[in-house]
Image 1 (cartoon, one colour):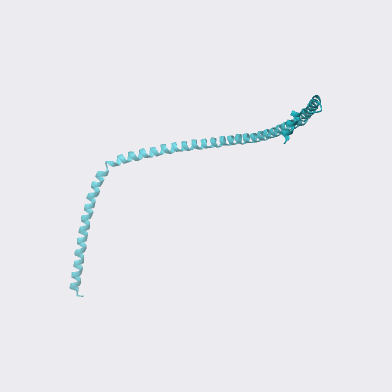
Image 2: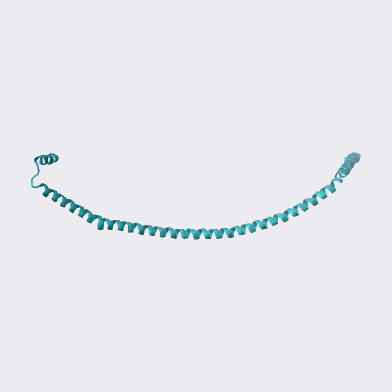
Length: 168
């Protein structure tokens, strides 16, 4: 390549670089103006944001303290509830054990009472009713004998016929 051509190419590239630098300078100037406008818009908001951050920080601290207190109270309540449930469980277990013992005693008493009642009924049956039946049977036999003797040896014809008809 000739030196003139090389000089021409270098000049073209220097011109292109200069144009790029001018464009960049223009963009930087535009950015500077935009940032200044944004800063003017934001500056009045900074004190408000600062106070909001301060209030938020205070609120978070207060909430943290209250949450800590509530958590401590909840733990106390849970501990108390656990103790009371242990006591209640002990009382229920004790009552269940006592009830079981009482039910077993009631069953024993009931079985004993039933066996005594059965024994009494058996003794009444054998000791009183059986002799009464025997006496009743003996009295019926004596009564039949007395009737037979009081009638005489022979029954009347009407009565004998009536008796025979009954058996036929």
